[in-house]
Image (tube, rainbow, N blue to C red; front, side, top):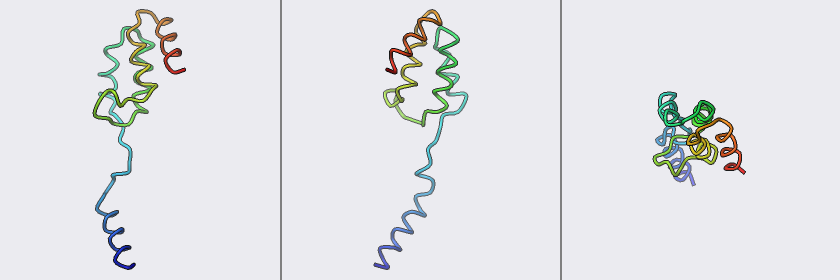
Length: 89
């Protein structure tokens, strides 16, 4: 039992900061927002990106960021808002 506790303590101390969630930098979020065709979508992408944890692939984005990116393809702000709202529902 003592060995088990010792192994757990050593394992947790060596794991470091594995359980902390890393977030994207402002530069990465702005780079992602550059592709948007309207200002509302750019702001929404940056806001949702800052709440997004770091991921390796774009298919791992959360729903809100995916919808913000999709709304960035609209030419007008009204269309972008409609796309975003329909996407998250």
